Length: 331
Image (cartoon, rainbow, N blue to C red; front, side, top):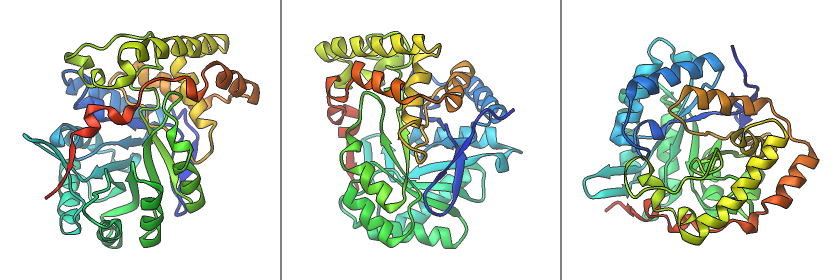
């Protein structure tokens, strides 16, 4: 059974379900891993038509790609596989590596872990400030020419980087954090991407779970350790954001949907070039998120939501989040 309609990312025809699946949390950031549950959820995703799976070489230091490889066995053609290279994790933390001489090796390692012969969408995970983006994308383009990669993407790239990358090779998609509570890409990234014909793939579209249900104060370790360092979950920011999240829940209940579905439907209403990738390890949450693809918010719904939770009302700057500060440039 396929619950999802489809959308096209970019100008070269990458067709994907309207809602994808972010797989990072199956391997890092949200407590102990449970491969059995995660694979069951991935198989359920196949049943529901949630066949746009997002991973990265850095997630669990390769664990996530290997996990998806197990779930893909015998079903490769049913899934659009997106993975990312360029954040290298080791015992010293994480570093960015966009050097063109290493792009091929990163790709071949991902192909091996995934157990596939090609990657449908290959992103540069973070732009390496020490390497001209034209050189990195040029190396990525060679992989397209060889058939190892079908489409190219970027993650958290500046508008200028999008311009320069697109001048080097067609870029199908760009990933950014984008949700009701973090909307800064709307200022300059969004118009640039649209002018260049680049599709938008919002990650953390539910605010790291904040918009999906009751607000929980994160602990310093365990399942909530990843969120704890985010200023939006701290002190007065958390209090103010909690009140806004309550408004999202109230409006969602009036429309007989869950807050997660309301938040995802809002993103989907921002344009046909938007494909959010909410993450979950749980089959029930997966089905809940997937159902948002069938929800059409009216202009009145959108106006009420904007009035109740305006962009400027949310508190905290995700750019101060420790998880982003720990990425360093390769040497």
